[in-house]
Length: 164
Length: 219
Image (cartoon, rainbow over all chains, first blue to last red; front, top):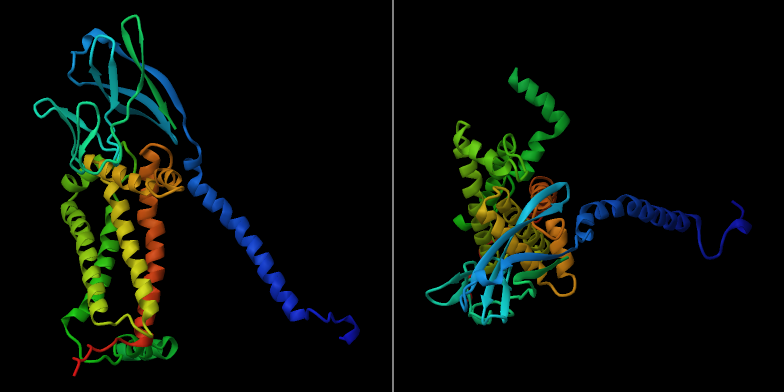
């Protein structure tokens, strides 16, 4: 090849090297990115739940004793429709003053249960205790038990279930 | 006859050379602690074989996972044995790999030129723990369900990307059929592929560099 066709900055070998790596990267991305997207895509579909769930007449709940209300809601994950169980603890302090706690431990999402004798919520996974008002007594939870937003309509207790 | 077949193959495949390089290589005078790498490899192979056998009956769906394992335990001859070996072998493998690492650490065998062998070993430990984590969900009983709830929540505590990681692991917000099938895929395809590649590198390095001798006492 005559020298007048030669670039002073880039010889043929370097050009081929650069083009191979550029095209190779583009092809790897075309093949690889859909694979990554394929794997993570269920994580990007955030299913949003927003319901008011009835917990029945408020008068059913005894005064000053946390009482469990369990219910299930059907949820769709991928191809599967399944019922997800929920637990709420209703603490009726006075006739009108009601607190409803989620039974999901604020540490790592195991379920807490109320023990009437010791008057504590207990999480079996990592031995966490919460008091009647949901405050952490001991164990690893970073914050008190979560509370549901509530409303009262004609003596019926509702909680606001938000997810996603 | 057998001799002539062997000679024919050996000339073409270099079997004697492979044998000499891999198994007849020179080693310093060592002790029983040096057997733990081989023990881990053997346990890993055993996990592979018993795992393949379990996959003959196991079905990774919420409807059938638990029942298919009950069937393995009660309806299949020696099912209890295959699953038992897989179950206990998993714990033994972690134990032997960990003691293997302690030996390498306390003998200083990770030092030059074997740093990269150590790095591949660390990757293998993480891979083995990943196998343990994903395998734990597969029986789909209460213990698996809550262990995975807790395990994925731990991933969720990572700053900034935690929530995303949690949803990638679960394949959504909830722990569901999607979680079970992706853990199964990770357990039998993705992590094993990673482990096989890393074990190969690890063994290549052991053969290439040889093993280090027991450190001498300070004089």
